[in-house]
Amino acid sequence: MLFAGKIPGVLVPQQVKAGYDKEYAVAVNIASPPTAMVIPPNTAFNMYSLIAGGASILSLFLSGYVVGFLWVLGIIVLAIFLARKRNYPIIEHDTSKSVAKVLIDSIPSLLLTLNIIRGIMSGLFTTIEASAVSVIYALFLALFYYKTVT
Image (tube, rainbow, N blue to C red):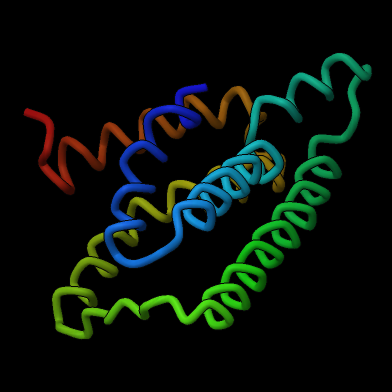
């Protein structure tokens, strides 16, 4: 319920201010969050595996990726179609070097997700152990790479 009240409360007014219809902005913000429930790694698949008596986590994860990808693709296609049909404003992209710098600086953080998935799918660690590895990796990044924690 955190998403239902907080994030759209910030995003929707900004989207309306940019020229989008309020109904459109709300619909996009409502349709997007459930993807987090199907794109792994997530708690629901771990719990299902335990309750079902050991269903394959790998199979659950792969099925989640397919469903999540199709869901996201559907949202993107529909959003683009409606935006063009309703002639919504196009936001200019920043093509400066700062974008490239941000992307390069974010690579170590993006590798966190890749490492989790690769480790689980290769059998190097379980989903529970993946959380511990993630915490250690994130702490390492915060302390030594980004230096945001003293």
